[in-house]
Image (cartoon, rainbow, N blue to C red; front, side, top):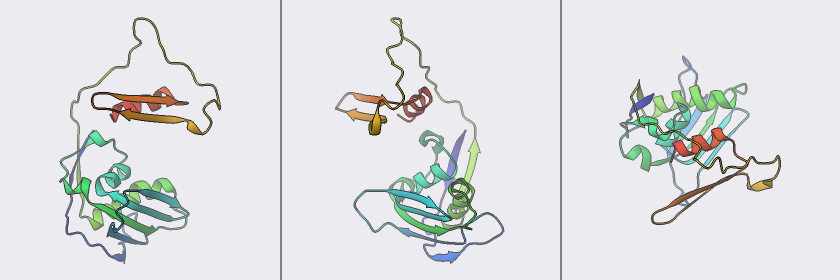
Amino acid sequence: VLMAVVASAGAGFCQAPLPSARPGFEVASVKPTASADGRSLIQAASGRWTMRNLALRRMILIAWDLQDYQLVGDPAWVGSEHYDVQAKADSGASVQEMEQPILRALLEDRFRLRVHREKRELPIYELAVAGGGAKLQRSREGSCGDSCGFHLTTDELNRTLDGKGVTMEMLAGNLSRS
C-alpha cells in the first residue's frame, strides 16, 4: 500500500483549539523549527504530545504507520522543512491514539493534508540461507547489555549492518528500509 500526499505550505502555525467533530488534540501549537542543532525529539506522556525538529514527512510516516518507501508524491519541502509540535489531548488519550488518529487530524487540519491510498506492485527481496548454512547466531538473553540493536557503518562503496540481540523480524524490517 502506497500513500500519495498533497499538503499546503501556507498552513496556519498558531495555537488554537481544534474542531471536536473527529478525534483531535484539545489545543496544539505547530511552528517551524527554530533550532539548528539537527536533533529531533518525540515524546508522549499523559495526554501531552511533543515533537521537536521533525520533518512533516516523518510526522506523516508516524501518523499513518508507513515505511518511507510507501509515501510517494509529496513535494520536496515535506521532507526538508522541520516543525515543532506541542499538543494536549484528553487525559485519557493513549499514546497510540495520539500518534495515529489524533495526529492525523492535526496534520490534515494544519497542513491541509490530503492523502490517497493505492496498491502498487513493487520489487521484493527474499532472505535465504546460503549454501554453507546459516552464519547467524542466536543471542543469549541479556548478553548484549546496553548495546542491543543495530549499528550501521558506511564507507564509499559498502554499508555494514551489525546487530546484537535483535529478532529476525527486526532485521527484515531494518533491511526493508535500506
